[in-house]
Length: 67
Image 1 (cartoon, rainbow, N blue to C red):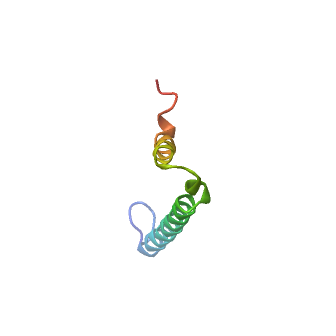
Image 2 (cartoon, rainbow, N blue to C red):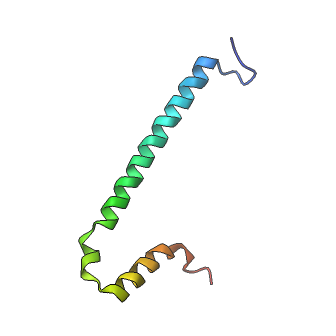
């Protein structure tokens, strides 16, 4: 049985499964990257005011140049 889109129900389920696996892989990669960034030894070299300033700079890196 084909749907109007030309994709069989089995093909649609397979496509969703593949997308779900890709999303899971991306989420796992993101969480690994976050753990590496947060646990990096660089953060131990900064005192409180410098630490806050450095993290805010990273947080707003996309805002630079929008002036």
